[in-house]
Image (tube, rainbow, N blue to C red):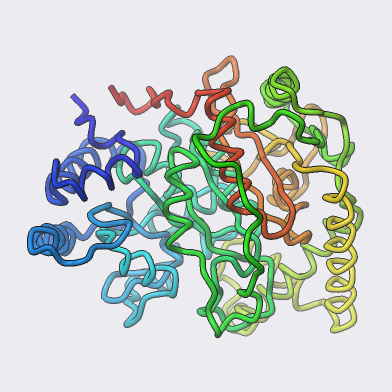
Length: 476
């Protein structure tokens, strides 16, 4: 039998912990039991620090009992993405070369989360160097979908999403360049927010001016993701993009479907005809568009200008990969998996002019998006073009008769929005006839992250499928 604590929301758990109705050790032990029972089937947690977590949980209980100040994440267990540096705890990046690497420092967002009182549990699985939206690597193997272990959990934050859905932890961190928070959230029926670049400061990477990759929160609900986001977000002097004007005032009170009344919503089921989408996914997304119209939203077919987004994304991504690993690949052509090696080589063939023109294209896209959001309040679209696919393949090769040549081709639904510099999230929207989760991608104006989370929370009241637990791993 499942201990109900593992499916209690992070917001409620935090309240129970602060009131001392439950202890951090009780919460931790419930999640550890769930991990021991189900992780062998899912393979979401790849490093587990039970002793360290118990020590931290006991210290958290003593701190509360002594009346000392506690943080908003007090006592909540979290396993960090295995690309995030965790001091004293193995961080492999899903690569054999670094399978035993133990960093001496925490990444900036990791430190913020721990400072807020969270209990470090371990690490969640990733694709090799987080490249791709299907989580498998040569160190730990494949992470499986809790709703059907024969299917992919998505990626690159696939371990994080699967851990949430399986009840291994109530919150999770992730990162997103081309959909790595949004895609696995869609596949695992959880919420994943790609923040506006700068909202969660980038003070760890070597290039503070690279805006494609961001860290962000995940939760089983938008409220839980918002709780984690409140800790991860906030300015830092080391990130030139981390200063924002105050968010516009939001309506007070509990989010509700009526929050959509009067909103101008652009519905982009195929991103203006730019992408193929599985019919089963479209059926879910189209039904939700109709539901939003029924509660008073003004929903019309429209899409931001995405012309040039594909090339800009691929050029800047490949250039970043070459800068990071080009010399390593040249020294050892077998070091990386074949599709990551291909991306690195593509980056090596680029010129400075290519990169500069990609940045110019991104500038134009950002400016056009600003104009678009003068007319619309929200964009809704698929978070993924496909439902979770066979975990034994590298990537889908066909969508509704449209052949896909590379492992990036099926990821366009999230990554075409990346160069626009907008916040975007995936919120549970429904299930295919086969019982596989489908996420609705919601995209807002630059800097509207908090408003986007509130709308996602209101959407959950309209479509409460986030409460449906997975049966694929016999979660009862």
